[in-house]
Image 1 (tube, rainbow, N blue to C red):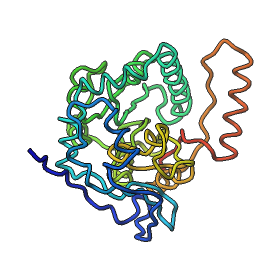
Image 2: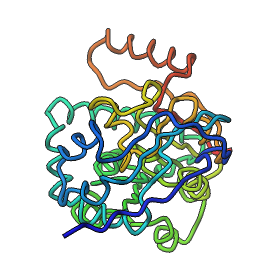
Image 3: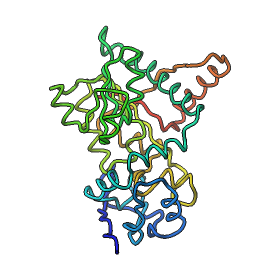
Length: 308
């Protein structure tokens, strides 16, 4: 029996500046090599290839602001199919297990603490003696929020996955911004909002950033992380596939284009405080030099902003 083809929508204007002057960097059919092999080798509940193999993908760049993104993305209806039937809970756990090691767990926890130390210092003037109120958008299992609460923060999360909300490590996780606002009954509620590996997945990242701005107190801190796609314009190998996966990583950011889209949403770039979680003096010195150079050369894809 022939599968019904998935429906894609055409983003024919830039996701950042709105300009319609786009150039294609790469493209083809989902069923063409090597993309077909990469997709079929991923863990799935149901393999999506029969639904998409004859559909076109096109990775484009805005001539005006140089933002890169996939022009054709799944419709809302088919995105629900992707989350409910293709990316099952079992498949997601299998993928996470494939990349999880003791070293990766340690580094993730270390990075969480480094962020928390910066957040505590950078939000002090804004909040006074009250605890940090933090929202982690796209929080997954709530691991970062659980760590935040160990440091006395008041943490909230948003994640669309019902499995992650029910089985995660944190209680205050909502499916949508609207439900969070309804529960708390206030805007300008948070001192800090974090977006770790989120913007690359969103159909309309600028609209989301503007919505989050309304939840952040004036002068509040926004932290954004995305993969660095500066050197990726085509899907040729495993690395490039992971960075610009046309079903999942539908937006490709560089340090400059990430900064541009966040600034368009009403934020200004700020230099993060340097924090250390190490007993190695040499590593501390190298980290300080690296963070300083990264700020001066604007080459970071982990960036801090402040609401104007």
